[in-house]
Image (tube, rainbow, N blue to C red; front, side):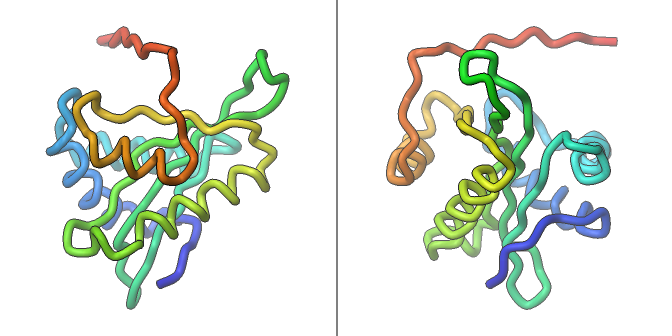
Amino acid sequence: MEIQTAVSADIPQLCLLLDNLFSQESEFKPDSELQALGLAAIIEGDGIGDILVAKQSGQIIGMVNLLYTVSTALGSRVAILEDMVIAPQHRGLGVGSVLLKNAIDFAKQKGCKRITLLTDNDNEAAHRFYEQHGFMESSMLAYRLFLDF
């Protein structure tokens, strides 16, 4: 298995992974067209973020997005970890741990002082996974306002 930064040609495989993720999340639903737009914006955008992929035999078996912003509290760049997903047949084999460790190291190299992520409130397996890798539950509460055009 190798970890690489995603390129535009990876978008179709990434959309398949996101289909898996969004079918199990309560707030989102799969939409390959919108997913491809978002992925392209990250991959092709200047400084927006990076997508790391785990590949095995040329196939993408996992992905994680790091999106960048600046924290005024820390006075530095921080990352938002989004869309971490491993292909169902590769779960429980350590792929997620390797990918997450690489994402943490990558964020440090990019000068990030913090990584924030969201999980579904009832996804206890994800909570345990992230806690095993040093993440702590925050006292902050996420609020969303969807802006429909």
